Amino acid sequence: MNGIDKVFADRSKKAFIPFITAGDPDDKTSLAIILKLVDCGADIIELGVPFSDPMADGPTIQRSSLRALKNGMNLERILQMIEKLRDTSAVPIVLFSYLNPILSFGIEKLAKETERLSINGILLTDAIDDEAKAIADSLGNVSLISLIAPTSTDERIEEIAKRSKGFIYAVARAGVTGVQSETSSDAESLVKRIRKYTDLPIAVGFGISTKEQIEEVWQYADAAVVGSAIVAEIEKADSKETAVAKTESFVRSLLPQVANKQVHK
Image (cartoon, rainbow, N blue to C red):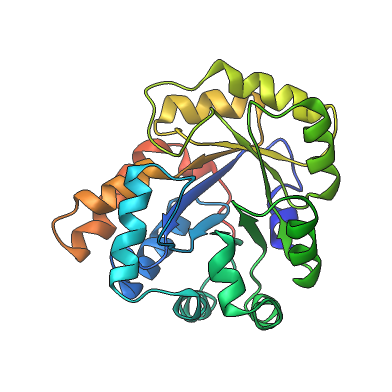
């Protein structure tokens, strides 16, 4: 069973999915942050593959991508980071990527690496329909995680749901990633629409940044994704060492009930 499927085997348990950009601020610190996220109760890690033109992302994640690229981060080094992670943790990993880095690395080569390193999912922000499905099919047991926006028609939702695996990523609001003061009412409506076409778990992301927002999302969805708010804590840190500590402190403030969560290792 894919690690993502294991996380959602008991649908009464809600999942927490943090996102960070791989290599921000550097490889070693990224790995340390991932391990802290697991300790804090992360059920799945979304690992952003830095890209020079991250059009779906707001300024916070754009800056993190640029910092990582400046440090020479690429998919090869991300896989090396995951290999080190696998020495101590089997936490499910979803690569959040644009198409260009995947094509540059090579689909066939990536397929071998995802199997070797037990990478569980891939989300391609700028590949859709047959193109996305062809890549997912080439990657074997790796789940194709699809984004569905509030602007999607019911016909479009049904089409996306048919080819998705793992879970569906419901975008809480139209636009790019970024912290919001409150979740949009569109998110719950979108989840209800998606449920008409699939039994897959549904995660809600884009703008989730507080404990209250996570708890709200958990009322109607299976998982909450927090990205920009975590990346912002990394950005604000005055050193690499404090980046780990600030991230841990922030995430624990989001999940005070962590002692009651099952940590997947």
